[in-house]
Every structure is written in C-alpha cells, then in structure tokens.
Amino acid sequence: MASLSSLFTTLPTTTSSRPPSFSKSSRTSPRFKVSCNASSPDDQKNPNLTLLENVDRRNMLLGLGAGLYGAANLTNIGSALAYPITAPDDVSYCVPARVVKKNDPNPPDTSIRGVACCPPASATAPKPYLLPKFSKLRIRPAAHGVDPDSDYLAKYKAAIAAMKALPDDHPHSWKQQGKVHCAYCNGAYNQEMNGRPDLTLQVHGSSLFFPFHRWYLYFYERILGKLINDPTFALPYWNWDNPTGMMLPAMFEQPGTNGDPRKNPLFDPYRNVGHLPPAIIDLQYAAKERGFNCVDQISTNLSSMYGQMVTSATNTDAFFGTDPNPEIDSKAGTIESGCHTAVHIWVGNPRMPNSEDLGNFYSAGYDPVFYAHHSNVDRMWKIWKDLNPRRNKDPTSYDWLNASYVFYDENEELVRVYNKDCVDTRKMGYDYQRSSIPWVKSRPVPRARNSTVAARSFGGVKKAAEKFEVPVKVDKTVKVLVMRPATKRSDEEKAAATEVLFLNGIKYNGEEFFKLDVLVNDVDDGVETTAASSEFAGTFAQVPHVHGKKMFMTSGAQFGITELLEDIEAEDDKYVLVTLVPKAGAEGATVDEIKIELVPIDN
Ligand code: C2O
Image (tube, rainbow, N blue to C red; front, side):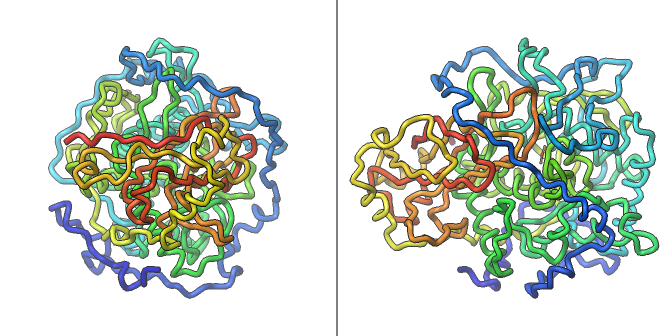
C-alpha cells in the first residue's frame, strides 16, 4: 500500500501557459489537504434535504429471465462503407425520447425534467462551425482550489443563475442545455442521415464519448461566458483523480444567500446526501459503501486511475472505445466505463427512482456538477496523449474524424461540429490549470507472489473452450482459462504490439446500473481483489439509461494486459485465468466471447 506522502508527486509540465489565479490571495497552486478524519454520518446529512430523504422511492430491480436475446453473430462483417455518425440537420427529426423505465412504479416528474429532450427548432439549417480566433486561452481551474470568495466563483454562479433565469424554450436555458445530453443518449435522434433510420443515435459506449462531450462543454462554457459578458470564462473541473480533489467540490454545496444552499445556483437537491463532503469518492463505486478508511480509499482510487490511464489504456481503441458501426456492437473505453461511471453513480441520489440526477443519463445534465465532472473526463483525454505521445494517439479513422453533432452556439446559431476539429483543446481556446497526477506513481502491486499458481491449478483445464460455453452468464462470478497468443515476449515485441484482453458482446440491462470487474490470475482466498492489486484488469460499468425499446444493451470492453502480466509474473504462461466478478445489475447479463490478442502499435 502506498503511503500518503508518496502520493504527491508532480508530472513533468505539459502546458506552458501560466494559469491565472482563481483565488483572492493569488495563490498559483492551491494546496488543499484532504482530511482523513472520519466524521459521523450525521454530519454528512444536509438538513435541507429531509423532505427528499423521507420519500423512500427506492429503485426496484426488475426480475429478468435469462436468455431473452440469443447470442449475437460475432462474425466481423464490418462494411467498407463510410459510416461517420451524423446528427440530423433538422430538429424535426427529433422524437420524444423514452427516458422512463417500463413499469416504473414511481415515474419521474416529467414536467420538471422535460423528458422530451428535443431542442427548439431553428429557422436555418446548421452551419459548419469554424473555430473562432481568440486572444486569451480560457483556463479551466480545479474546482476544489477555487476560493469561496473569489471573483471567479461569483462569476460562475452569476452565469448559471442567468442561464436558469432564461425562458425554458430559449436554446441557452438551463433546461435546454440539460436536454442536450438526453437527446444524444436516450434515442431522441435516429440515424436517418446515415441511411439507417432504424437505428438511434448514441454518444456513449463508443469512441464518440470523448469528442461529443468535449463539444457539449465547449458550447456550454461559451454560452455561460456570453451570459456574463466574459469570453474568458472557463468551467471548473472536478479534480477527482488527485487526493486533494476527491470530495464533491465545496462550491456545489455552499450555502447561498441567507445560508440556504438552495439559493446557491450550483446546488442540486438530487444528490446522494451520504456523499457530501467530507466523504471521499470511490472511483470503483459499485453502489455500495466499502467502508475503506480514507487512506486506503485514496490509494485505491489512485491505482484505479493508473489502471485506466496506463496499464489497460495501451491502445487507441482501449482508451477511446471503438467506432460506432451498424453491424458490430461498439465498445466503451477504459475511462468511460471506469471512473466516469463511478462518479455519476456516486453523486446521483439512490433514493430517486432513476438515481437522478447524475445517476441516470437523461437527468445528468441538470446537475451543475455534471459539467465539472466531464471537464475532468475531458482533461483525462489530454493527459493520456501527453503521457505517451509515441503510443497514445487520437483515432484516425475516417468515420471518427468525420462524425458530427449539432449544437446551438453562444450566438443562438445552429452549428455542425466534427470530431476532427476538437482534438486539440488549445486550438479550441482552452486549457486546464495544472494539477499534479500522483496516480502515475501508483502502479498496482500483485496480491499474491507468483499468482500464476492460480491459473496452473485451475482444474487442470487445458483449453478455455472446454470449460466455457458462450454466451456465458455473468450473474455469478465466472472463471475461465484464456489462451494467450504468445508467451515470453521480448521488449521489442512488446514495443511493436500490446497484449489485449477482449470481452466481446457484453449484454446487460441498460436501464439499471451495471458493473462487471475483470481479474487476471486472481487467487481465491476470500479476500476481495481491488484496483490496488495488479490482478485487477479493469471494470465495465455503465450509467443506466433508457434507450429505445430494448432493455438489454450490447457493448464490450478491452483492457491492455502487457504490464499486468509482467507484474504478476505470468509472462511465460500459455493460459491466464480470467475472473469476471459481477458487482451490480448483473441479472440476465451475459458475455459472448473472451479472448486475448496482440494489437499492433503503429508509430
Ligand atoms: Cu454523457 Cu457522463 O455522460
């Protein structure tokens, strides 16, 4: 276990700009200490939320029969036709999204949340967007370092208040901005523009995840700047990857005028009151409290970040997810199905029927925390590229570069934006205030010495296929031996190709929170293996959302394991033992295929 003192290390500088000051005392690098003093649970209760707490509207798990859907045909029939996902020109293509679960005994109040999701119509077709010239970069500050009395925070609150004061049908209004997320993820648009009106458009669970959210925040930020007449305004980011930022940033729960938090424009009543400061976030949150002490929680979080940014994110597809394709189900990237989902679920209110707000896609955009959370997700994209520029590269497929979305810009004009124009934040006019990334020093450590014993002793099974029938049910822990494509790989071979563990065709109930952890050569000794251990290959966790008519969704995951195999000393072995551990919502869930392949690294 790493000691806390070793956690604060600084990464070599990746940006040359000097961040502006976000505090009155003009500190350039705020040093906030995380307090590891546990407080009594009562201290964490927000007195203004008693009403909500008394309404016990717990989520009801729907009983699902297994085998509702047969195994998908996994044959690769990727067409050679270009398929850049294209959002429709005209909002008349938008249909009211279904966001409410079937048979929901307590459906959300649709009048508050505006479930239709469609943006207001525009008289003109979207114009292609040109990145505007700017004289000063907008620097996004780490939220926890912002001084409560700073001008910056006053401006941010004024901007959100102005947005909330606009009439609902204004394209810049709070409601419309929140709806953007719902429209792009709850099936409000179909793929008419791609010649597939039978399919709906979805920006999660694929390589569209990073670019879509980057553009979404980009316009949201410029609209806020416009509302307060400050084109340099930048959103804060929730620095949950650094120990100093592992609590919900104070600004979102600060009392407003008269000491009433509800008067703070950044406040949202639909949050988990058990997770207000000083609770430390769990970046592998499985909708259960783990009862870790603060030091262990922080250190597990850092190892988890290391896993998702370094160990398993060894190729473009693993980090970004794969491109949408009408014939093959796309996969989600390591950050999306890792810390990104964990933060959503950890903040959302479990007492709401759909874990509103952050705990469900349709409602996530109605909590100001959403935008600070996604700022940090966006920052991870930039950091990942800077970590290893030789290997960590943006997707280059035609489909990815030319995928496009439609937004209202700060001048209320409908514009079309492309992935290819959002790969460099500095060209887009913004960057992030620097914060150290101590997780680069948090490489997990093996739990067991020579844990290959686990694989060798597994019932003497020689071939994975003999033990493993597809699709495999993952409602219980499953162990399977998987053959490796090569053993004893040299350094040159490792530099030329990365070894990747694939989970193809993961079918799960998308309307519930689903989390599946993946371990390699785990020893079965009754002790839980966490992300702090090398044996932890990764997690596939998804924010619940209703999308179209299908309750079950299909996706996949992939995790680089070259470094993991070094750490657990399994490089000589022909087989590894893969353990799939369901953590949440796994009823009826299945996996079609588990395999290990070498993925070339092109330089
Ligand atoms: Cu569009 Cu965090 O989700």
